[in-house]
Image (spheres, rainbow, N blue to C red):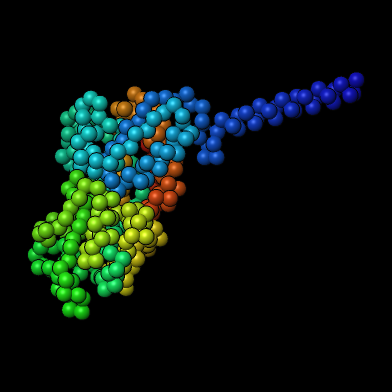
Length: 321
Protein backbone atom coordinates (compact mmCIF):
# COMPACT_ATOMS: atom_id res chain seq x y z
CA UNK A 1 0.00 0.00 0.00
CA UNK A 2 2.81 2.39 0.93
CA UNK A 3 4.51 1.58 -2.43
CA UNK A 4 1.31 2.36 -4.34
CA UNK A 5 0.99 5.72 -2.56
CA UNK A 6 4.62 6.58 -3.38
CA UNK A 7 4.09 5.61 -7.01
CA UNK A 8 0.97 7.79 -7.21
CA UNK A 9 2.82 10.79 -5.79
CA UNK A 10 5.70 10.23 -8.21
CA UNK A 11 3.35 10.13 -11.20
CA UNK A 12 1.57 13.27 -10.00
CA UNK A 13 4.89 15.17 -9.68
CA UNK A 14 6.02 13.94 -13.10
CA UNK A 15 2.80 15.14 -14.68
CA UNK A 16 3.23 18.53 -13.01
CA UNK A 17 6.80 18.80 -14.30
CA UNK A 18 5.71 18.03 -17.87
CA UNK A 19 2.94 20.61 -17.63
CA UNK A 20 5.34 23.25 -16.30
CA UNK A 21 7.83 22.52 -19.05
CA UNK A 22 5.13 22.83 -21.67
CA UNK A 23 4.07 26.19 -20.26
CA UNK A 24 7.67 27.29 -20.21
CA UNK A 25 8.00 26.45 -23.91
CA UNK A 26 5.22 28.89 -24.71
CA UNK A 27 7.43 31.79 -23.63
CA UNK A 28 10.83 32.88 -24.92
CA UNK A 29 13.73 34.21 -22.84
CA UNK A 30 12.34 37.75 -23.14
CA UNK A 31 9.01 36.70 -21.66
CA UNK A 32 7.11 37.01 -24.94
CA UNK A 33 4.22 34.62 -25.50
CA UNK A 34 4.99 32.63 -28.65
CA UNK A 35 1.45 31.25 -28.97
CA UNK A 36 -0.53 34.48 -29.18
CA UNK A 37 -2.57 33.33 -32.16
CA UNK A 38 -1.56 36.46 -34.08
CA UNK A 39 -1.60 36.63 -37.87
CA UNK A 40 -1.68 39.18 -40.65
CA UNK A 41 0.79 41.87 -41.65
CA UNK A 42 2.61 44.88 -40.22
CA UNK A 43 3.71 47.52 -42.76
CA UNK A 44 6.55 49.93 -41.96
CA UNK A 45 8.26 52.57 -44.09
CA UNK A 46 10.28 55.72 -43.58
CA UNK A 47 13.78 56.55 -42.46
CA UNK A 48 16.77 54.92 -44.10
CA UNK A 49 18.74 55.66 -40.94
CA UNK A 50 16.30 53.73 -38.75
CA UNK A 51 15.99 50.92 -41.32
CA UNK A 52 18.80 48.68 -39.93
CA UNK A 53 17.27 48.89 -36.45
CA UNK A 54 13.74 48.15 -37.63
CA UNK A 55 14.66 45.42 -40.10
CA UNK A 56 16.56 43.58 -37.37
CA UNK A 57 13.58 44.03 -35.01
CA UNK A 58 11.26 42.62 -37.69
CA UNK A 59 13.55 39.64 -38.19
CA UNK A 60 13.46 38.80 -34.50
CA UNK A 61 9.71 39.33 -34.25
CA UNK A 62 8.88 37.11 -37.21
CA UNK A 63 11.16 34.44 -35.78
CA UNK A 64 8.85 34.30 -32.77
CA UNK A 65 5.55 34.98 -34.55
CA UNK A 66 5.51 32.79 -37.65
CA UNK A 67 2.07 33.86 -38.87
CA UNK A 68 2.80 37.61 -38.90
CA UNK A 69 4.54 39.20 -41.88
CA UNK A 70 6.47 42.41 -41.11
CA UNK A 71 7.40 44.46 -44.18
CA UNK A 72 10.06 47.15 -43.63
CA UNK A 73 10.89 49.68 -46.37
CA UNK A 74 13.07 52.81 -46.44
CA UNK A 75 11.62 55.57 -48.60
CA UNK A 76 13.05 58.21 -46.26
CA UNK A 77 11.45 60.03 -43.33
CA UNK A 78 9.47 62.62 -45.32
CA UNK A 79 8.49 60.28 -48.14
CA UNK A 80 7.49 57.74 -45.49
CA UNK A 81 5.14 60.20 -43.83
CA UNK A 82 3.51 60.61 -47.24
CA UNK A 83 2.68 56.89 -47.14
CA UNK A 84 1.75 56.94 -43.44
CA UNK A 85 -0.64 59.89 -43.55
CA UNK A 86 -3.19 58.32 -45.87
CA UNK A 87 -6.90 58.08 -45.10
CA UNK A 88 -7.10 54.45 -46.16
CA UNK A 89 -4.39 51.81 -46.49
CA UNK A 90 -1.62 53.91 -44.97
CA UNK A 91 1.36 52.23 -43.36
CA UNK A 92 1.16 51.06 -39.75
CA UNK A 93 4.43 52.70 -38.69
CA UNK A 94 6.66 55.43 -40.07
CA UNK A 95 10.29 55.40 -39.00
CA UNK A 96 11.78 58.88 -38.67
CA UNK A 97 15.19 60.37 -38.01
CA UNK A 98 13.61 63.67 -36.99
CA UNK A 99 10.48 64.61 -35.05
CA UNK A 100 7.14 64.82 -36.81
CA UNK A 101 6.53 68.31 -38.22
CA UNK A 102 3.59 70.55 -37.34
CA UNK A 103 2.15 70.29 -40.86
CA UNK A 104 2.35 66.49 -40.66
CA UNK A 105 0.57 66.54 -37.31
CA UNK A 106 -2.10 68.80 -38.79
CA UNK A 107 -2.62 66.45 -41.72
CA UNK A 108 -2.96 63.50 -39.34
CA UNK A 109 -5.61 65.41 -37.41
CA UNK A 110 -7.48 66.29 -40.61
CA UNK A 111 -7.48 62.63 -41.64
CA UNK A 112 -8.57 61.46 -38.20
CA UNK A 113 -5.37 59.47 -37.66
CA UNK A 114 -4.25 59.23 -34.06
CA UNK A 115 -0.46 59.07 -33.95
CA UNK A 116 1.85 57.95 -31.15
CA UNK A 117 5.51 58.97 -31.19
CA UNK A 118 7.88 56.24 -30.02
CA UNK A 119 11.47 57.25 -29.47
CA UNK A 120 13.52 54.09 -30.13
CA UNK A 121 17.24 54.99 -29.98
CA UNK A 122 19.92 57.68 -30.25
CA UNK A 123 22.01 58.30 -33.35
CA UNK A 124 25.14 60.34 -33.96
CA UNK A 125 25.41 62.38 -37.17
CA UNK A 126 28.68 61.07 -38.57
CA UNK A 127 31.03 62.63 -41.11
CA UNK A 128 32.94 60.11 -43.17
CA UNK A 129 35.97 60.38 -45.43
CA UNK A 130 37.94 58.13 -47.73
CA UNK A 131 40.32 55.61 -46.18
CA UNK A 132 43.26 57.30 -47.94
CA UNK A 133 42.47 60.74 -46.55
CA UNK A 134 45.18 61.31 -43.93
CA UNK A 135 44.73 65.05 -43.39
CA UNK A 136 41.07 65.55 -42.35
CA UNK A 137 40.82 62.78 -39.78
CA UNK A 138 40.24 65.41 -37.06
CA UNK A 139 38.21 68.57 -37.68
CA UNK A 140 36.57 71.15 -35.46
CA UNK A 141 32.79 71.51 -35.41
CA UNK A 142 33.19 74.92 -37.08
CA UNK A 143 35.38 73.53 -39.86
CA UNK A 144 32.86 70.79 -40.68
CA UNK A 145 29.99 73.27 -40.84
CA UNK A 146 32.00 75.66 -43.03
CA UNK A 147 32.71 72.90 -45.56
CA UNK A 148 28.98 72.41 -46.15
CA UNK A 149 27.92 76.10 -46.22
CA UNK A 150 27.90 78.04 -49.48
CA UNK A 151 28.40 81.32 -47.61
CA UNK A 152 31.81 80.22 -46.27
CA UNK A 153 33.30 79.92 -49.73
CA UNK A 154 35.19 76.69 -48.95
CA UNK A 155 36.04 75.01 -52.26
CA UNK A 156 39.36 73.26 -51.61
CA UNK A 157 40.81 71.37 -48.66
CA UNK A 158 43.47 74.08 -48.40
CA UNK A 159 40.65 76.61 -47.74
CA UNK A 160 39.94 74.72 -44.51
CA UNK A 161 43.59 74.72 -43.38
CA UNK A 162 46.57 75.95 -45.41
CA UNK A 163 48.48 72.71 -44.79
CA UNK A 164 45.71 70.61 -46.32
CA UNK A 165 46.00 69.56 -50.01
CA UNK A 166 45.18 72.09 -52.72
CA UNK A 167 42.44 69.79 -54.01
CA UNK A 168 38.69 70.37 -54.48
CA UNK A 169 36.43 69.06 -51.72
CA UNK A 170 33.67 66.72 -52.89
CA UNK A 171 30.66 66.94 -50.56
CA UNK A 172 28.00 64.24 -50.32
CA UNK A 173 24.89 63.50 -48.28
CA UNK A 174 21.38 62.02 -48.28
CA UNK A 175 18.71 63.88 -50.24
CA UNK A 176 15.67 65.82 -49.03
CA UNK A 177 13.56 62.67 -48.60
CA UNK A 178 15.62 61.83 -45.53
CA UNK A 179 15.25 63.10 -41.99
CA UNK A 180 19.05 63.06 -41.77
CA UNK A 181 19.22 65.78 -44.42
CA UNK A 182 16.56 67.80 -42.60
CA UNK A 183 18.28 67.39 -39.24
CA UNK A 184 21.60 68.53 -40.71
CA UNK A 185 20.09 71.43 -42.65
CA UNK A 186 17.79 72.66 -39.88
CA UNK A 187 19.68 71.88 -36.67
CA UNK A 188 23.34 72.01 -37.64
CA UNK A 189 23.37 74.52 -40.52
CA UNK A 190 20.51 76.65 -39.13
CA UNK A 191 18.79 76.44 -42.53
CA UNK A 192 21.60 78.25 -44.32
CA UNK A 193 22.25 77.40 -47.97
CA UNK A 194 24.23 74.24 -48.60
CA UNK A 195 27.39 74.45 -50.67
CA UNK A 196 26.70 74.43 -54.40
CA UNK A 197 27.52 71.18 -56.13
CA UNK A 198 26.86 68.93 -53.14
CA UNK A 199 25.93 65.44 -54.36
CA UNK A 200 22.75 64.30 -52.59
CA UNK A 201 21.63 60.69 -52.94
CA UNK A 202 18.56 58.61 -52.06
CA UNK A 203 20.47 55.46 -51.13
CA UNK A 204 22.99 55.35 -48.31
CA UNK A 205 24.77 52.47 -50.02
CA UNK A 206 25.46 54.81 -52.95
CA UNK A 207 27.01 57.37 -50.62
CA UNK A 208 29.26 54.71 -49.08
CA UNK A 209 30.39 53.65 -52.54
CA UNK A 210 31.05 57.22 -53.74
CA UNK A 211 33.13 58.18 -50.71
CA UNK A 212 35.07 54.92 -50.75
CA UNK A 213 36.21 55.75 -54.31
CA UNK A 214 36.97 59.46 -53.85
CA UNK A 215 39.99 60.56 -51.84
CA UNK A 216 38.69 64.13 -51.58
CA UNK A 217 35.16 63.20 -50.46
CA UNK A 218 33.36 63.98 -47.23
CA UNK A 219 29.79 62.89 -46.51
CA UNK A 220 27.32 62.86 -43.63
CA UNK A 221 24.87 60.22 -42.47
CA UNK A 222 23.89 58.24 -39.37
CA UNK A 223 26.47 56.40 -37.28
CA UNK A 224 24.94 52.99 -38.02
CA UNK A 225 25.82 53.14 -41.71
CA UNK A 226 29.38 54.11 -40.89
CA UNK A 227 29.60 51.39 -38.25
CA UNK A 228 28.61 48.72 -40.78
CA UNK A 229 31.06 50.07 -43.39
CA UNK A 230 34.20 50.65 -41.33
CA UNK A 231 36.16 48.54 -43.78
CA UNK A 232 35.43 51.10 -46.53
CA UNK A 233 35.34 54.44 -44.71
CA UNK A 234 36.75 56.31 -41.73
CA UNK A 235 34.87 58.68 -39.43
CA UNK A 236 36.08 62.20 -38.76
CA UNK A 237 36.84 62.86 -35.09
CA UNK A 238 35.10 66.11 -34.18
CA UNK A 239 36.51 68.71 -31.80
CA UNK A 240 33.61 70.44 -30.06
CA UNK A 241 35.99 72.49 -27.91
CA UNK A 242 37.53 69.87 -25.64
CA UNK A 243 39.58 67.81 -28.07
CA UNK A 244 38.68 65.42 -30.92
CA UNK A 245 35.83 63.00 -30.23
CA UNK A 246 35.25 59.82 -32.19
CA UNK A 247 31.58 58.91 -32.69
CA UNK A 248 30.88 55.64 -30.87
CA UNK A 249 27.91 54.17 -29.04
CA UNK A 250 29.66 55.30 -25.84
CA UNK A 251 30.17 58.96 -26.88
CA UNK A 252 26.79 59.38 -28.64
CA UNK A 253 24.10 60.45 -26.19
CA UNK A 254 22.03 63.30 -24.79
CA UNK A 255 23.49 65.54 -22.11
CA UNK A 256 26.90 66.75 -20.99
CA UNK A 257 28.01 63.25 -20.00
CA UNK A 258 28.30 62.37 -23.70
CA UNK A 259 31.14 63.99 -25.63
CA UNK A 260 29.38 63.68 -29.01
CA UNK A 261 26.08 65.13 -27.78
CA UNK A 262 26.23 68.18 -30.10
CA UNK A 263 25.72 65.88 -33.09
CA UNK A 264 23.40 63.42 -31.31
CA UNK A 265 19.74 63.12 -32.23
CA UNK A 266 16.91 60.81 -31.21
CA UNK A 267 15.32 58.54 -33.82
CA UNK A 268 11.70 57.46 -33.80
CA UNK A 269 8.98 55.27 -35.12
CA UNK A 270 5.45 56.68 -35.34
CA UNK A 271 2.51 54.36 -34.73
CA UNK A 272 -0.91 54.68 -36.35
CA UNK A 273 -2.96 54.18 -33.19
CA UNK A 274 -6.13 53.57 -35.21
CA UNK A 275 -4.45 50.54 -36.80
CA UNK A 276 -3.09 49.38 -33.46
CA UNK A 277 -6.62 49.31 -32.05
CA UNK A 278 -7.98 47.47 -35.08
CA UNK A 279 -5.15 45.00 -35.70
CA UNK A 280 -3.74 43.13 -32.68
CA UNK A 281 -0.50 42.25 -34.48
CA UNK A 282 0.31 45.95 -34.99
CA UNK A 283 -0.02 46.77 -31.30
CA UNK A 284 1.87 43.63 -30.37
CA UNK A 285 4.73 44.60 -32.70
CA UNK A 286 4.87 48.09 -31.16
CA UNK A 287 5.12 46.62 -27.65
CA UNK A 288 7.74 44.10 -28.79
CA UNK A 289 9.79 46.92 -30.37
CA UNK A 290 9.95 48.92 -27.17
CA UNK A 291 10.61 45.85 -25.03
CA UNK A 292 13.66 45.05 -27.16
CA UNK A 293 14.69 48.54 -28.28
CA UNK A 294 17.76 48.81 -26.07
CA UNK A 295 19.24 45.48 -27.18
CA UNK A 296 18.56 45.96 -30.88
CA UNK A 297 19.95 49.52 -30.74
CA UNK A 298 23.28 48.19 -29.53
CA UNK A 299 23.32 45.56 -32.29
CA UNK A 300 22.65 48.03 -35.10
CA UNK A 301 24.92 50.99 -34.37
CA UNK A 302 22.71 53.11 -32.12
CA UNK A 303 23.10 54.27 -28.55
CA UNK A 304 20.31 52.82 -26.38
CA UNK A 305 17.70 54.90 -24.61
CA UNK A 306 17.53 55.20 -20.86
CA UNK A 307 15.36 52.42 -19.42
CA UNK A 308 12.98 55.01 -17.92
CA UNK A 309 12.11 56.31 -21.40
CA UNK A 310 11.45 52.80 -22.65
CA UNK A 311 9.17 52.02 -19.72
CA UNK A 312 7.19 55.23 -20.23
CA UNK A 313 6.51 54.27 -23.86
CA UNK A 314 5.56 50.73 -22.90
CA UNK A 315 3.07 52.00 -20.33
CA UNK A 316 1.35 54.14 -23.00
CA UNK A 317 1.22 51.24 -25.44
CA UNK A 318 -0.23 48.83 -22.93
CA UNK A 319 -3.03 51.31 -22.21
CA UNK A 320 -4.22 50.65 -25.79
CA UNK A 321 -5.00 47.00 -25.05
